[in-house]
Length: 169
Image 1: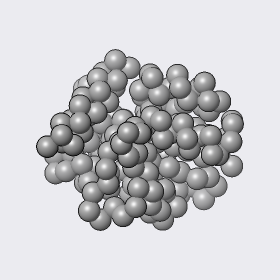
Image 2 (image 1 turned 180 degrees about the horizontal axis):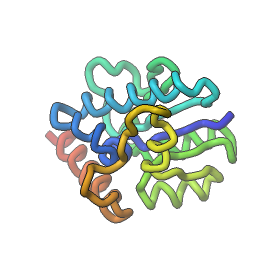
Image 3 (image 1 turned 120 degrees about the vertical axis):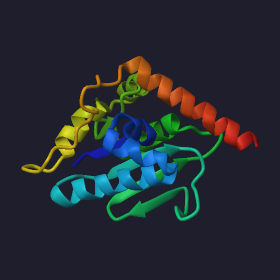
């Protein structure tokens, strides 16, 4: 059984049905992703462990830096560690060749491969995770192109800067 690790904010920003929740708050976006993953696991009982790794501090209502939400483990990378480094730690703890990481971030993809794990694009994961027979969850908004690798990296970089500014206050 494999372990699936999601690069949390990268996934949220790449899926319009999830990113629209960010208009309310980061927590709303995180909750939407957790629900999506819980529904995926409920439909697919043979799935292994599923981790969602987020950069930054946890917020009220999220408990410890690693918390179980049903069968989904939510992990918050704490300073000075970043989500990318925490993803690699999860890979190490699960064993070489047992993990699949979901991210459109090129840097994450390169590091994951170096650690012996497979990389899966957000779009491929969403396609795989959507309910069969139901309306598909589209990985991109109608009429818009999918994020390029450089756009996904820019989103990740912008978010890191945002977190640094918030911590500096």
